[in-house]
Amino acid sequence: MLRIATRKSALALWQAERIKSLLAEPAELVPMSTEGDRIPDRSLAEAGGKGLFVKELEQALFEGRADLAVHSAKDVPFALPERLSLCAFPAREDARDALVAPAAKTFARLPRGARVGTSSLRRAVQLRAERPDLEIVPLRGNVPTRVARSEGLDAVVLALAGLRRLGLADKATEILPVELSLPAAGQGALAVEVVRGSRGEMAASPLDDAATSRCVRAERAVLARLAGGCTLPIAAYAVQEGQLLWLRAVLGGPDGRGGVTVLRAEARGGDPDQLGRAVAEALLEKGGAALLAAAKA
Image: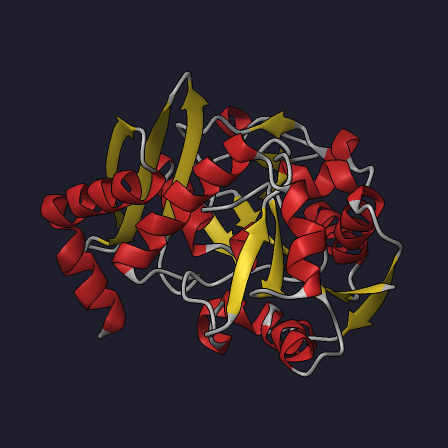
C-alpha cells in the first residue's frame, strides 16, 4: 500500500485524501506535524519561509517512511533537495484570493483605515498599493481560524481554493480580481513530491494535468530567478491561452517613504521555464534588483 505524507491540518488532509482518491493503487495517509505548524504565532517571513511546511514530509520520503508527499504547490520552495522532484500537479482549483468582510462585503467598501488580516507579504503589498490607508494585521493559523478572526477585523484575505475545499466558500464576500491581488506562484494547485525513480513517482505521475503543470512551472521559474520565497512579496500567475501561456508577475517592497512600491511585468510564450525567467528579468530591469537587495539587507 502506498503511503502519503501530509500535514495534519484539515486542509492538508483534504488535499491528501483528494490525491488518494485519484491514485490507481490503494494508499494510506501518514499525517505529521511540521515546524511551520508548531510556530503559529510568528510570520513565515520571520520564521524562515514556507519551506517550514515541507521539510518533515521530505524527510519521510528520504527515510522511506512515505512514498509520496502532498503539498499546496505555493508552499513548496523553488529549490528542491537532490533526488526529490514534483512529479504531478493535478488540475488546479480557482487560484484567486477571497475577501471575507462580514460588514463591508467588498474591498471597495472597506472603511478608511480598515484593519485587514493576512499573513502574506504578497497580499499586503498589493492591497496597500491600492489602498495606502489600510492597516495590515498579521494573521496566521488554519483556514477556519482565520475565517473566525474576520469578526474582530474589518476583513481577512485568504485563498479561495482553501475555502472551497473545506466547504467554506459561502464565507467569501468577494473574489478579488487578479488585477488587485495577483495570486502566489502555485496557488490553488496541489503538488505531489516523490523520490526520483521511486514507486511513488510511478504511481503519482499519471495524475499530472498538463495545463496546470505548465502554468505552475512558469510561475515557479519566476521565483527561481528572483530567489523568492514568502520572505519576499512576489506574485506570479499564468493561464493557458491556446498553445501559449500568459504569465503575469508582481514584485513589491517599501518605497522609502512609508508606502509601498509594486512592479509589474507580463509576457506570453510557449516554454514555461523560459517565460518565467523572461518575466523575472523584466521585473529586475524595472527596479526589482534594488528591491531584492533592500529586502535581503
